[in-house]
Length: 180
Length: 104
Image (tube, each protein chain N blue to C red):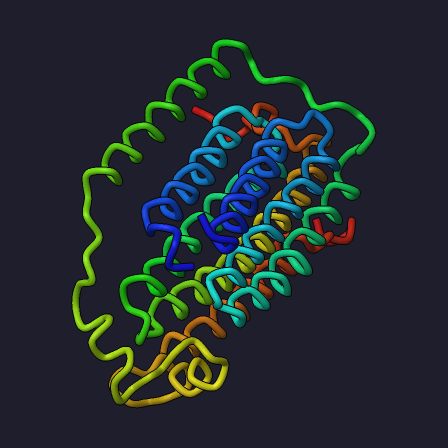
């Protein structure tokens, strides 16, 4: 087992342990911090897969954006020192059984399936395209209008983000008393 | 990277998915349920990136799907938190059991 494999198993243990603590911790603020560690571990996994751009986006959007938003909303909506109520016993038992059964089923299916080098995968890799996941290639294909370009989904996503922004402002807006 | 088989990465993402599922089942607080949804979306992203890297290393489709999933997750988190804050103003609580005015 080489160094690379050891790094992968340490990273995956870190991700899973932090994720498990994030969903079981009784204090909501600690839960948010464990979520932050788990998301950082996923970014490390992307670095390990040599997808540097995705790792950077993961850190900027998730760790820098969503977790900060969640922490803000925790401060706005509740006393962060208070413990959350524990789960109902019967519901917790049911959830553990369902989750374990689902995980075992997924692992059995994964063991049966053989992942071959399907499609043109390895053949073209060293050939003419030689794309790779560099930032230049990603940017060129994301904004190209040719057959495999992604400019239409890109524009649709920007409209969606604008709609989400306006929707957030309208939903969270406080009405003045005379407007009611 | 080539020393680790693809199925181990898929098992990691399945484990992360079911951890998020457990949180979604047991938690009754809306913010913690939102955190569980983020874990589930992350496990899907790991799948996309791993398939792209192992099976089609010359393509970029998995990268684009991951980027779009991240963008939609950001929009979804922002809208969810606006709804949570509005709900807190009306009910003084963000427990899903307390928000039962539109039930039945």
